[in-house]
Amino acid sequence: MAAAMARGWAGAEGGPKTTLFCDLDADRARSLSDEVRGEVRPSLRALAVDSDLVVLAVKPAALDAVAEELDGKAPALVSVLAATSTPRLSGLFPGVPVLRVMPNQPVAVRRGVLCHAPAVGMSEELHGMVLRLLGELGTLVPLEERLMDAAMAIMSCSPAYIALVAEALARGGEKEGLEPRVAGDLVSGALAGTAELLRERDPGTIREAVAPPGGATEAGLAQLEGVVDDAFMNAVEASLERVR
Image (cartoon, rainbow, N blue to C red; front, side):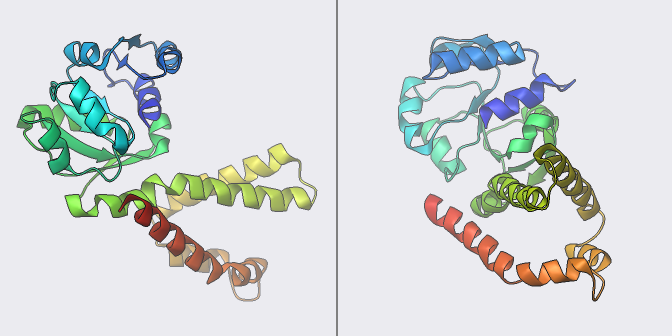
């Protein structure tokens, strides 16, 4: 996720002036830094000293070790950790301004959705600056802390689900003779256009417009209705069970 955010900021006019990286895998940090014209730091402490804002993007199980390495200090924190509440972060980084954010992968192309909980310890000026930076990556959605995990299950996980749908649709086209590249382009174009429609119309209206009675789309929907509903509901529940 940090890599996706860095790529998005690298292509944004209002992104950070300089992006610094530190990772247990030094080669990975160096490769990403080269890609987005950033800089590498040899340790988390060195990174924090040279930064105005630290984006914390580690596995939740590594949080205690990271906080210890940083000695609980940072200029300000943006956390993208799943299942890690703002109070827990504040407990490990006492007195440090904290904002918990849950982005999704489309931040890499500045079309992401970024849910954020209420900030702790941030001045109005700092909070505004952080939100402006995050806003370069997509649409900001303020949420109560208690809803962050539910949001993750439907917007942070869903690009993988939609990619699975895209693969399945493209395979259906390939089976009927379309070249793989053509099938992929048709599906990605249809999904992108549908996403724009969903900004203006509700899903039911779109279904009715595309699937008049007795048509080909209605026949296809008959194979999906109920099955797809159950599958996606189960996917959301399974994701939440993993982080609870």
